[in-house]
Image 1 (tube, rainbow, N blue to C red):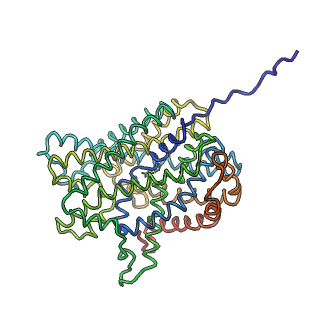
Image 2 (tube, rainbow, N blue to C red; image 1 turned 90 degrees about the vertical axis):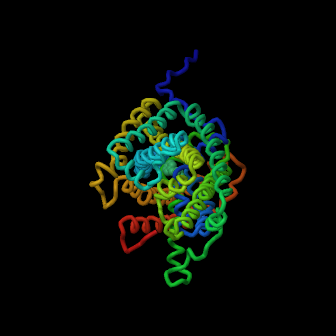
Image 3 (cartoon, rainbow, N blue to C red; image 1 turned 180 degrees about the horizontal axis):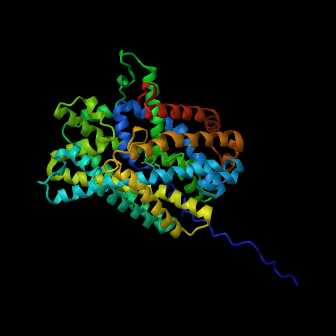
Length: 485
Ligand code: PHE
């Protein structure tokens, strides 16, 4: 009689998965759409001449961004692992790359949540203003912002609330937590974004600002002597490239983790194209909400447009509130809706970062999701203290001359992410070969339409372009050779 052999193998728990292709697209888009779209894209576009920047950015998204996103998703689905263990599963020698890619979200998520906390504070302040518009704390928006971020406890407290909300969603799991929250937050985000841009377009005098934003302005590519400047073009391309990485949540393993929950029969290529469309659309709409308003503000106050647009990170937290402040209760309402929308966008992105950390801990240690979420909560909350207090009580500590938040941002975005992206391209282009990615793609669709483009990009163009980003970002961050982007 045949008795079944007793199996010594411990059953492997089945990996979580999205409920379908649409759920995957929504989750990846929710990760991609975040502070990068609403806060960073508008100020970069403003700085680099509006339409000119948009054109360069679009060209990069459909080529370089496409290549990297396809690569990461395919690696995740192929290995069924998060970034920490995915690379070593494909090739033992590349284990350290997984570790590097995992360090990135662990460093980013704490400071991202601190900024999320700032957004919550703004939302809350505007919500109170709707009830009582005569008390306007944003009359001195710069003072309000400076006062809040340098307070001894508040920035940490608000950040902690933000981290807690992320933890709750993640503890509920891929389908019941992440997927469901996206289903509610993302449509609301789209509706609010469209609503505010329509409001802005209807403001008397917004036309000039819209033109400034959307019409490519060749002046942006001229050097100091007024003629076309290659260096200025290079700066625009490099700035757009850095933004693209950040905005599409690339080079930090998130798309590997999210890809590992994707079903084999779903189409990677089509999904990526849709994610790009969503992400870019929201970035452009964000500019529509902000730039015309800032333009009007410049006109009204007699500030040179160039200076107003160059407010950089302060554009959203200082300049914009100054403008809303002029519109009384309506301004307070628009402000509340705007910051709620930003909070939702930041929340869904932070969730993806947090999930990449949790999935890595689960894959490496075989920990249960809830325990890993709990463990990571403490790690993230602890690390967030540095960024939260770095503008106030710990303001004297400035690694490489930067406050903690800027320093963490610099180390991840400017140094680690380009390194991970370059090594990933070399790994795929020259070690496992693009054919491995193609084979994975063909499991979900009959044909890999962009195969030719993909091969050339991943082997040659992407590593060279990203190396240029790496060098220029390091020079900029450390102030070497007078390079400024
Ligand atoms: N892509 C997000 C944004 O545009 C930011 C982000 C970065 C999200 C890293 C996840 C990981 O804001």
